[in-house]
Image 1: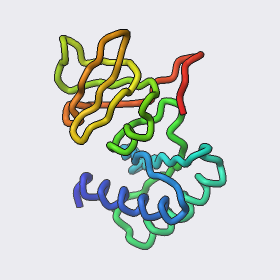
Image 2 (image 1 turned 45 degrees about the vertical axis):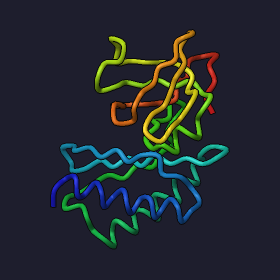
Image 3 (image 1 turned 90 degrees about the vertical axis):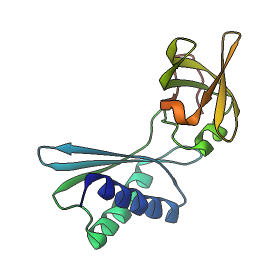
Image 4 (image 1 turned 180 degrees about the vertical axis):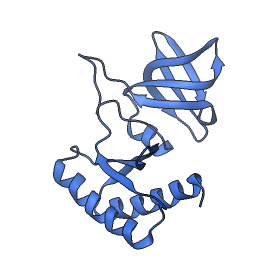
Amino acid sequence: MDRKKIRGIVEELAENAVSDLGLELVDVDFKTTGRGYHIIVYIDKKGGVFLEDCEMVSKSLGELLDLHDPIPTSYTLEVSSPGMERPLKKRKDFLRFQGEKVKIRTIDKINGSKNFTGILMDVREDSLTIKRDKEEIKIHFENIFKANLYYKKGGKAK
């Protein structure tokens, strides 16, 4: 089984484990190490994630992984909160954090740049708009390489 297929199965199992517990799956990071795979599952909920949430997801997802056995080698499973500079992956993430400061890296240049930091102003079906200084920049979702909430001491993040 190829790595992309394994990742898809792990994401689906993680989504099931997390939603059954009333939490949100933010991301699954899948790395290869000398000892096998290292799977990091990032979860969130309103009010923040606590150690008990991570433990419950780890137990539930561990049981699902054992049951379905999609990983052909040994692996380490880690469950964590996304942190203050939470990744923004899905359209619903961008909708949830409208009005917050974000940092976006694009695939292709827009106005000569690939890096943008500003306030997430508007989210459409296929694009978003951020405001930095007095300039508004429209970025299509397909052009986003990486996006995160941006937290700087004295800054604001939900």
